[in-house]
Image 1 (cartoon, rainbow, N blue to C red):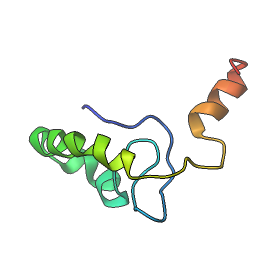
Image 2 (cartoon, rainbow, N blue to C red):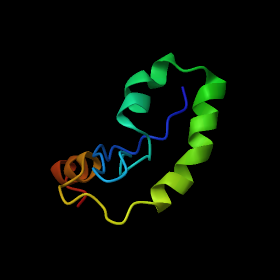
Image 3 (cartoon, rainbow, N blue to C red):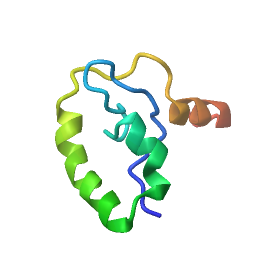
Amino acid sequence: METPCILVCSIDDKTGYCFGCGRTRNEVGAWSLYTDAERREIMLALPARLETMERKPRRETRRTRMARERGDA
């Protein structure tokens, strides 16, 4: 199943979008329930959503933590 997740799971309080992928909490939670067409439609909207966010999350992301724990960073 195609997913836009990049393991930066933090929701922007201002927009309600995930900083990593641009989906809403509801979209993330229901992702596996959507049809392929519904997922593609949402994914087309994500780049514009990500442009609306002014800042990135302040906490260490899951991907960064995993890399650090592996010794990559």
